[in-house]
Image 1 (spheres, rainbow, N blue to C red):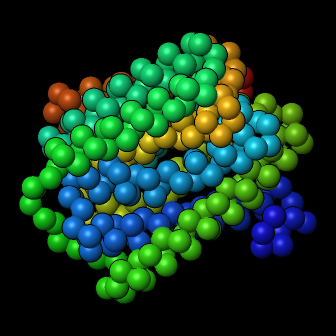
Image 2 (tube, rainbow, N blue to C red):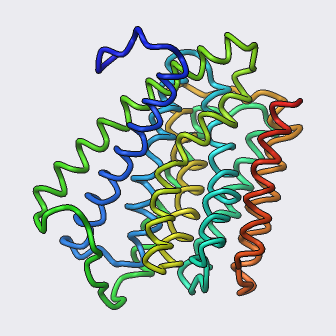
Amino acid sequence: MMFGLTGLSDPVLVLVGFILLLSGGEGVVQGAVQIAYRLRVPPLLVGFTIVAIGTSLPELAVAIEAIGRGTPDIAVGGVLGSNVANVMLVLGTAALLGSAGDAGVGLRRDSKAVIAATIILFIFVGMGEIPYFGGIAMLLLLLAYYTYSYLYSRGKSDQKAEDTWLPDNILAAIVATIIGGYMIWQGAGLLLEGATGLALTFGIPDSVVGLTIIALGTSLPELAVTLIAALRNQGGVAIGNILGSNVINILGILGVASVVGGGIEIASEFAGRDIWVVIITSGLVTAMLLNDREIGPRVGATMVIGYFAYMVFLYAS
């Protein structure tokens, strides 16, 4: 392990992993947005693709680490739990802060992508595995949707550059993105080692570790972006990042994990409980967006409370 932190206790490893994931995610997001602006990438595409990819790197890092260590339940649980956390905790926080207003046409389109990706995940969970060629198909679908989104967004009006702590220089943005990515990968390794150590100590199943500790840790970059968007009163950025991250988590993260692992098995407990939580939470939010329903502070408070109730239920059960 890097950074010479192998001798630290498991709780400290988890904490340091969280910090590296959050810091690295910030670097990747700021660098990616600056690069996108400099290369004149359509603005409607940035939140759903570049920013969402940047904030989903922790999930990718953890999933690949978990597959390499022979703990696929952590990889699958991390994605399922992260999607629930993104919707209930991150979007709920945005709503509490008044930053989950009108989604706009582009985000309603992306809501449909979340629904489609969730249905695909439901099918694979019911099968009990994501086969190798299933992973390839998921990645191709993600690429096809990105292509469609680009063609849809092409020709839209340009957006002004956002405030950032980076110098107004594309080289600095590239360096920040690379360093941020490195911090994310190292943070994922520390978080995974500490979390699995805690699981062994307290007899917690890998699936619960993935759904709770790993999911919360890997959702911190999304939470950071949401808080920044709330302070700048940019509801579209917050919701777009969350929807994009959820699509990437399913089609991209699990797709890559399946290809790297030559297919991955999905524990039956995910089919009996957690996939339904993902379907209900994602379904309710996307239905509100598609019907132009406002996600206000009261709804946001209910979502955040519901998320922590789900965490208590997982550990109590």
